[in-house]
Length: 487
Ligand code: ASP
Ligand code: MG
Image (cartoon, rainbow, N blue to C red; front, side, top):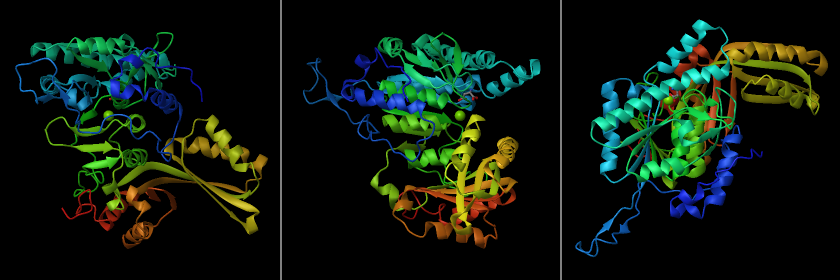
């Protein structure tokens, strides 16, 4: 799909090692934000970007009084993103500021991306609803972006207070362009000119996350939680060695520790696995940020803003990653299943149904069709978010006459337990282990769906947490490290 934007003017600013890859990068960039879901198609781009950690020693050219064999690292760039909880108080802002300064002192260029402080965005939304039941989306964006503007200014002040150079920039000031879809805009291009000039002047550049500006100069937002996406996109266009995501947890876990107390922190996870985990319910990171990392091969490091301990590295799949069959188990709640039975199994029925579903902007989680009666009739089951269940049911009932649908039933209060891992490709018996774990826990399975690296079982909402625990136990996820060896 042509979106007609370009990364014009930015090529010459890319670190030289990446310049030759720019045509590919531009193509990838174009398709990136214009494609809704491409979990299952890993990008061909494997060699662009830097490995992590960086190993690019360069020879010191001018200081003749130093030993001839001394090498230094050329200036490399790091993006550090701080979420709302990590900038919630003056003290936490100081802590984040010190991290950025430390990297400057280590010789890195630093771009910081910050979210609104604490629960600011939620509070602003509450305020909006208090003055109007249905606020115009343009004005919502105008309001919500103020949260990040507060954070960037304070962060810049904090760094100045510590005696270092810093500048805060809004999306409009740096030129982060999006389409015009208010409250869920997509990034089209990022201008590196201003960023580069400020970085070269030795400043820490602090960018407001979550926001953009469209062609007409209107302020947009990228969707809830999208400061991650701002950070990953900046890391991609600037050729950063790593995009660090600072948060209030110390990494990505094999399951939500609130559900599974003995869940373990994952040291390294592939982009594909992380994308699947995010879409299957793991709330750690904004999905589009992972897509940016994957497309441009930027390693992402999710880590705690409170400690120096390494967190979870999201990276290109490496050989050892297939050693374990399951990397993590997720729970997605608030789902409903709409089952249509006795449908004529003619070509065009699913197309017609999904044309209507699409018009209503309903996101369908899973679709299962099965034919029966000698292939003459079919049944169709759609898994949707609870909030879309009524709209989807009404729509199918409306189509019943036109398509000769026998019966439409809706089942609410469902959850989905998913096991995810690239190791599934080379291990057998993963599905049976999962089904057996649920049987042992006496949890009935409502529906099953699988893809190359995911097995999902739909269960009653009340069975969800137990299901996650049973599956996590069955794969021994609390006892093994990332390489499948005993901890
Ligand atoms: N402040 C925005 C939100 O709460 C963006 C973010 O935190 O990533 O959704
Ligand atoms: Mg977040």
